[in-house]
View (spheres, rainbow, N blue to C red):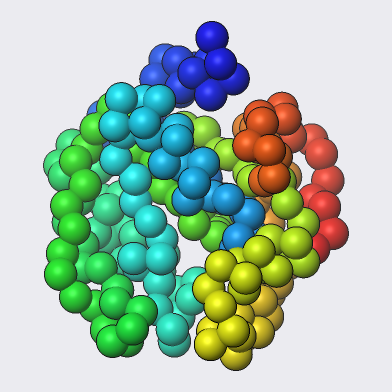
Length: 195
């Protein structure tokens, strides 16, 4: 059994946290490997759906998605219904076509702030991608290219302010090494690492 396989089994065995759904957050700094890890974990869970917070955030409100997440995703799941929400188009700066996410036994929500205070009460499990902010942000900037450098500078300030006011890491159930993808262990009771 692989570490990821073991984690998938443990997640599937948890009691539902939101209607029939076991909602699992994958949080960490931008560029820490959240999307890649969530995709691998979703596959290990037999194709579990993934809600990407980049689809709910906007240029104007990079962390102002809590209301949209609640109304369009969490409230339907609580009723046992599928979630449908318009996906933000980062090139056109507006919401576009809708996406439907089924109220599956396990649903992953991934993105910076996925484990924020407003979401934690309905989470079955919180995964933190362990990679320091500077390394994660450098990786993200390299991935996105120099044409997005100005956006990244603005993003880094917004992310720093978010995690200062509402840190997720101290509440994580497990951490995952953002470089190797290895599951490191439990974080409960550990202090938040400096960003």
